[in-house]
Picture 1: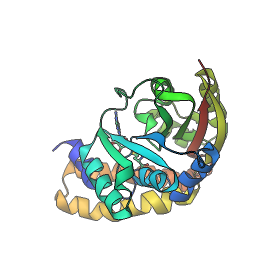
Picture 2: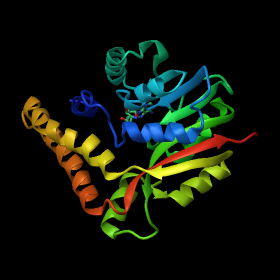
Picture 3: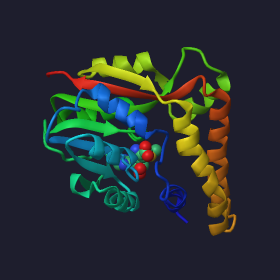
Length: 251
Ligand code: SAM
């Protein structure tokens, strides 16, 4: 059994595949300054089953290209878009986020919630920048230390899982060093992690283990997710996703 099958089984029927929330996507939209603009072209990269894609389509006058490398997620997204009445505004694109073929300076905004870590924050902001029009908006959420000091158990875990984890000031410095100016920042509240992501996932654990008859890799996946959840519950004061909204500066 492929790991990918297990991950799809655990996450495909979820509203979201990472921490986030509709109110937080809307807040990022407000901070982006795009709300009054017309005919926007936006890419939502690593969209999963499309929670943010659908909020973007509902809250902006925009065509949104929803990009993910897992076709199963995109199929779910298309169903959600139909149910929500926003299919006309959304095009799905099965592609890897490190090999995108948007034209130079063609996008008004690039969105990416909880996904840029797959190629790394700095590589992501560098790779995607050419696709943005001058003055275009980058809006990404990214694992972020909430303070310069944190418990070593938490630091060890996330530094192992995602070596680029850092403070907001360090992430903003990277934006500034790579041709962007930050225009907004906030952190995701606990409800985005617990109520919107971890609790619904925990409810799917039993079904997953039953489906795979308690196979060792299914158990390992559940245990790994549970370990991450327990760590978050203990140390949520020190870590969250930062939501970074930045504008592309001229070359
Ligand atoms: N943005 C969604 C959300 O917040 O619910 C999904 C976040 S999930 C943690 C990360 C997403 O990135 C998954 O849907 C995964 O399939 C996608 N992904 C991972 N690596 C990718 C890659 N190289 N190219 C495109 N998508 C990728």
